[in-house]
Image 1 (cartoon, one colour):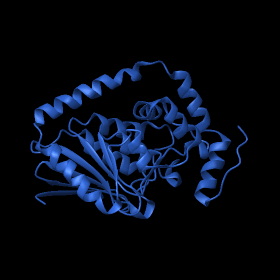
Image 2 (cartoon, rainbow, N blue to C red):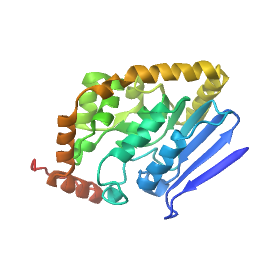
Image 3 (cartoon, rainbow, N blue to C red):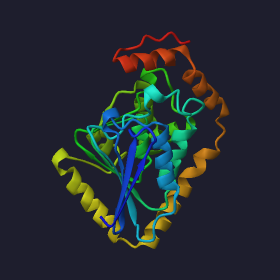
Length: 265
């Protein structure tokens, strides 16, 4: 590799690595002992990596992860610490940076991509996933609800019927079904994931960079109209759920491996 940097948090546990080789930059989630669950330092690092102007030689960024999972979502043990309690703005800001990055972002997904991990994959431009990968939004199962920003991405890529299934039921969905629905580019046998991803990466890198950058700008701008729809009342409902006794019980049960019983309070 001709350029390599490591972004590491002060606790020496959260690591996001970046490597650049020619036209391709690779950003890797490297918190395998926590199934790459997102905490505040990781969100900050990812946001910065996708906010900075691309290097002159870069034509696309590849998003990967190490360990058994792509990303298990926000770290529930740290949800109410490290500045993550006040709002969902940290994850929204990070995902917005990924989506608005001026060059294509390709997510290569293995294992689970759940909640915030699911959103991270879907905010990328193109997703190639292993056949064993699973995608999901399990928030309803622990008493939480997605913000306007997070829910609209599911609606945008999956349509209203599937969005209801993914959000209201919350069970994981296979990568094959995600591909059939057009939510990801393709699902491939596990052993072929790297080769299939590399074929796509090479194809993108060979295209005219000014054309690709302009096209991504056009696509992003056309999808931003939903941001202008009034949704303060919905935000209030989401925050009520987020602060509820059900949410506290649901998160505690999930951390213990149990199933919560909800009271609607």
